[in-house]
Amino acid sequence: MEDFLSFLSPVHFLDTQLPELYNRQQWGHILWEKRQSPTGYADADLVILGCGELRSGDPGAPYSESPDAVRAAFYRQYCWHPDVAVYDLGNLVEGATLDDTRAALRIVLHELYRQGKTVMLLGGSHDLMLQQYEVYKLENLTANIVVADMRIDLDEDDVVTPTNFLYELLTGQPNYVRHYSHIGFQSYANHPHTLEMLDKLRFDFLRLGWLRESIEEAEPVLRSADVLGFDMEAIRFGDAPANVGGSPNGFSGEEACTLARYAGMSDRLESFGIYGFRAERDQKGMTAQLIAQMIWYFIDGLSLRKTEPSLDNRAQFAEFPVVFADNHGLFLKSRRTGRWWMQLPNHKFIPCSLADYKTALADGIPERWLREQERSF
Picture 1 (cartoon, rainbow, N blue to C red):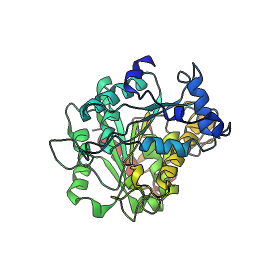
Picture 2: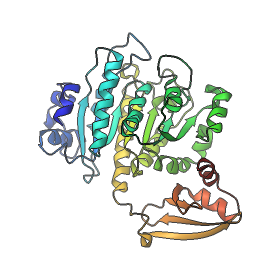
Picture 3: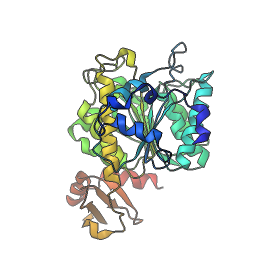
């Protein structure tokens, strides 16, 4: 932990809060006690880290205190999952330059990864997600990347900004993206050619309207993710009034919390970044409260993650053999969480949904199965 100290602010938000302000079962008191404990960090399943860097989108922007606005809301919530150990590292210190901040964030995230910690990163602008991804470049490992955003940020430019960082992420060489999925895009906010390019690369993109009719279809996508970046502009303005650049349409607050819970349940996910929140634009702190609730639901998912048995423990799964389109398939359903998996011809199991099973049962080929097969060639 000592290696982090030079990158973290010496004044933690907890240092400005008296522990008696909180009930012993509220996160504020629990995290205050964790900070006093010599083993609080070592035992942590989830580490919270703030980075208020905004200069990539606005060169004159001051370092944001928005992560602390989220903390103020989160600390007032009650802990229902004492089995999930959480530690709040505080905020990254602003670098002398934008690149200095990025470099420090990359170092901290890489060290947390090597220590096996799951990270909740409170941004900052969305391009900071590149540092989440670059951890895998440093490890020479491929990663499944998922982004939730109304826009697909693929503008071409020589300088990395919040509107083009995906271009560097998806096309930079050497590339370590195994698969990319985009959830919640809104068609009128994106160029048609952008979607054509993602389709040619065999990447997946799930439209907002389709997902809102069947939000559970996002669960297998998030279950396969190593890295998740959530831009708050994916949420409709009425539920997140800090989104001055957002849209009257988007995920509802309840749907955002559902997605966060799905992400927590994923036994692959190692970092979850929430970006684009500007506390100074928030009305009555509603957006900060929503992000805090997303964190609460992410922890709820982490608690379920701890109880899901391995696929090798077949007694904990219901098995459904299916023959579809001349393929002999096997579907598994967890008796504990109700989640589904389907078997590929190479006998590997991938996350799927009830809808995939129903498609196979009707002698159709599930699109998720087909896309995975295409990517294997």
